[in-house]
Length: 83
Image (tube, rainbow, N blue to C red; front, top):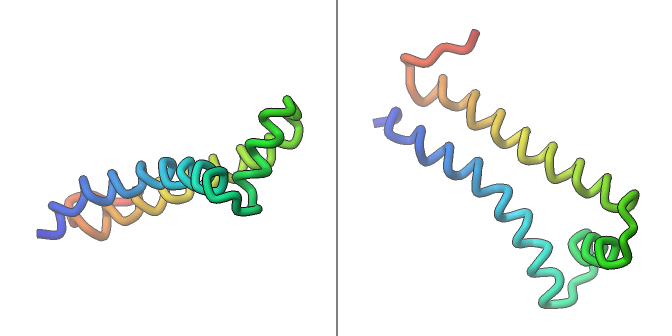
């Protein structure tokens, strides 16, 4: 039964990127002061050096969640080995 969770873990790790993108939209709609509003203001002004740390944070968080998903495959399905 645990090996049936592998596709769910994969989709959850991929959806994390959509969640982070949704944070930017949510902060813009409700005018929450945060990194999303900062990102949109920097993008609108064309200030790309201010966008770089935000992109690094997004990419690193997605990579970490995908790494966690890959490691959890070995725990969910005993046929998969980490080497």
